[in-house]
Structures are given as structure tokens and as C-alpha cells.
Length: 157
Image 1 (tube, rainbow, N blue to C red):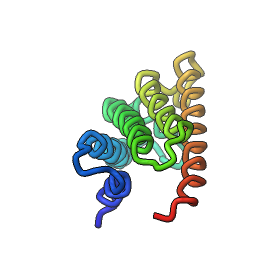
Image 2: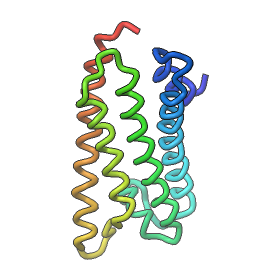
Image 3: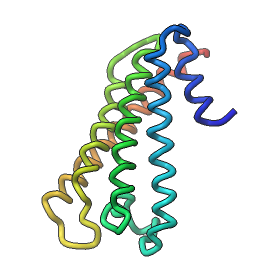
Image 4: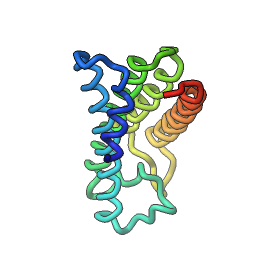
């Protein structure tokens, strides 16, 4: 079983088979994440001038293939928002904080798609906002993961 199939199955195992909307949202969540991962892998190969150990993934948007990174951020944002929606619809204890935090990361990814990072140059307003929104988004993602880890620990399935 592939990872994406496992995730879609996990998200939709408690959903009645007639709930096609939840299944679609789960597929969008997996698709957006997969798109992001493949896009970043392609950029690691295409942009050989950037060392992934030294440069942030946002800096790929500054190169010749920057449009790929912009699409990656859009896909990650849409995928994370869809994941938050799918988790909100399928959790036994619906709670609002976990899905909102995951979706908040998605919103931050959509914002940073349109605000380029500064790279090694001088700090600009766009770059500063990009960094701030990225930090807030990652903080929301980590908090959401801890929220769901706690919730899933109590869930025997």
C-alpha cells in the first residue's frame, strides 16, 4: 500500500461511502502535499547552484525555475487547507484547534507564494513579511501536529 493510499484510507475510514466530498478533500490534501514534494525534488536537481543545506526552500523561487516553487507553495497551501478540512470532518472528537492550525499553515503557504524571500541579499519588506509568515505558519503546523498527536493517542483505531 502506498503512503498516499494509506493517508486517504486513514482520513476516510470513518466516512460513509456516500460522502464523496470528504473523499475529494482527502485526495486534494494528499495531492497538494505530493505536488510540493515532487516540485522541491525537481528544483533540487534543476537549480544546482543552491545548496539545500545552506539555503531555504523559498530561495528556489528566486532562480530561473522560480515559477515551480510558486506552484509548490500554492499546492502545499491548498493541500494543507484541505487536510485541515478533512481532519475536521472525520475526527470523532471534532475540536476546532487542530484543523484550524493545520489550515493556518496552508494559508501561510498561500501568502508566501506571492512574497519572495530575500536570499543572500539585503532584507526587504517583502522578504521580511515572507519570513514572518513562514515562521508563523510552521509554528501553527507544529502546534497542530501536537494537537492531533494527543487526540490520536486516545483513539484506539
